[in-house]
Amino acid sequence: MIESKYAYLKQITKQLYNMKSTKVDKQLDGTTPPSVFIGTYNYPKVFAGPLLAPSYEDSAIMDNPEAWVNNSTTQQEIISYRLNLVRGKQTIGITDLENNYIEKLQEISMASKSIQSEAEFNKKPRGMTFSAENAPHGPSAVLKKFDIDNVKWDHQLEKTYYDTDLKAADAVEILHEKDIPFSQIQKAFSVGTMGVKDNRKLVPTRWSITAVDTTIADRLLDKVKYYSQLDTYRVYEFSSLNNYYAILEIPSPWQYEWMEAFLDINGKGTMIFTDYENNKGKKEYSRVGGCYYTAKMAILEQLERDKLQAGCIVFREADENYIPLGVFNVRENIRHAMSSPYKEFETLNNALDYIETKLKLTVKDFRMAGDLLDDIIKHRQTTLDQFF
Image (cartoon, rainbow, N blue to C red; front, side, top):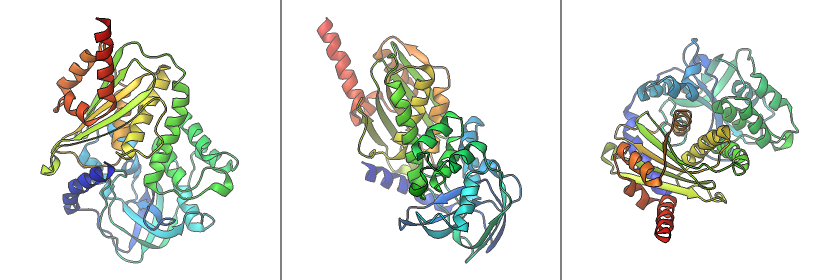
């Protein structure tokens, strides 16, 4: 399924390459939001480098996904921010952390605000990139020279950097509990600032997002599994960036299904992709990619806050104007939904009937494409039949 999903999204993004990204020469003086990007190509020797804005103004908003949904930033505004970021890169082995260039990237990842920067490229940066997992960015080129101004580090990120006996997963958990934004944790994780000293390495941005999502979710689930189960049905919902999300919580031990529908985007047909886990969790990589893990993490944050356990079914519809912007879109929208007032229902049918009034497809469409929701409905019906 993951191959068919990425093929579908690739078809969607083809026409986006007609958009205009920023144009810069071989010399670029400006700022970094702060932002870094590690690619997957040619792993374990990867392209690593900063994302740079061709302006001395504060560029923090250009790589601050936590602020975009909260501030009702439009899809076009986000794309504009991102296509004005220039990716500089050099080829680096993932364990080659003891060099001046990587140290600069590590400083950037731990910075508390935008940093003035100077870059010289081998050639004029060209192109742009859209991805299902990562936020877009503008043109890129190999760096010939790169320098940054003095950096003020975030205090919590600095502490985990200097603690070379602290495991990376423990560092992620500590930073999350200290309310360090996810995007900051992920960037610092990706450039090897966390973990036992000899185990530190570069982690491609795409992989680091899933790694941090999974680490936080696993730690939260270890607590949530011991909480009392929800005794009614709840529906959380939110619409933003051409997406509608409904999260159905049911009275049961932890179980989870992610269901997403892309509604005939660019005339490519309507497709539904799903994946799930039972109370024992998931061992293999999700067939729908990183959105599975980031939604799970956002839901578990709410269950931990409320000290409750529940089963969770996520319905997502992306409409015909949707553009892939990266998994932050899922994380921040679901976080917003889970922080909003919920609607409560006495029965599963009542909850599903409500959700169906908000969907363009039917609940049956999702049920037939998935696994867990169908099993839950069948189980509830069997129980009722036995009762009567």
